[in-house]
Image 1: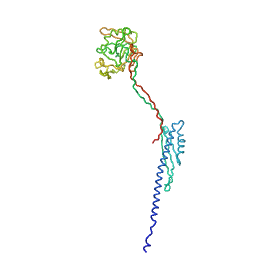
Image 2 (image 1 turned 90 degrees about the vertical axis):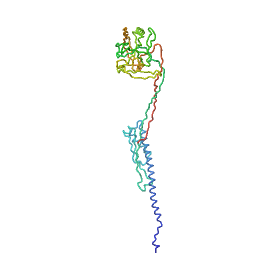
Image 3 (image 1 turned 45 degrees about the horizontal axis):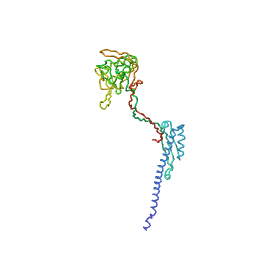
Image 4 (image 1 turned 180 degrees about the vertical axis):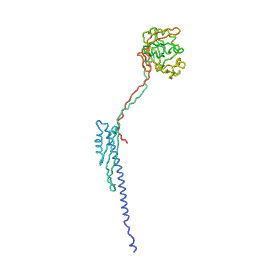
Length: 364
């Protein structure tokens, strides 16, 4: 009797296997559709990127407007490359066009492969892409080279009186002023770096200011006869005299050059014109007044006065002031006896112009 109570369990494994297969197939379908959806979204994003780049690339085309990009160029590109399109939004509005940017938003229906058995048969995807157009532009670069060349020396040598004017009156065109006066203890407005060349009507004073003007006491005293001769032959001719510049006189500052006796190295120092005792602070020094503190005055002789024991006085009438610090010199102001050639180092500037090509790129 008990053998009838014993149940027959054959076939139960088959039912369990069938149930497990259904679950496994569902997960497999889901996995396949997830991979497929990921792939489709990547493809859709690529298409949106390409459409945005096509729109941005049309910005520089003459005659193309924002409406053309929004209504024709981008939609035509999308229609040729995307199926199952639900919506397309192109935003090349005035604000974006002014910034050379085109924005494209695409919505597409993506059919599922297997997952539709368990859920919706399709997936709605939306992607956005923005592309920017950057115009090409010129890029200029300057290359500076030091070039040495030989030129006639029209600056560093020339005929002028062996004095320096240190009074503002020397700049009043047409108004008489005096030089060779005692303006400080033992100082009569004399310079040192000059030489007397020629004789008679051909006599002149040659001043070399390549280093500047050297200020010394008493150096003109031994040249009184030469000055008399020069005056006698130049009463009705233009003569030149160096002067402290209006700026140096108004600021009471003068730029001095000092040169090392061993290697000639120049040191430049700005010094006071007068010391606390009212004496010229820069006379009888080993330095030279720099050209930046000087001007050149073209004058005519007014009078040459012999004061006996009190010395002599030259009266001049200024006609023109030359700002030699800015390389302003009288025409032909050179040594009458020789054409000196000097080496001048100049900057040779070469301008290189390159063109940076236009760029179209995706942006965030």
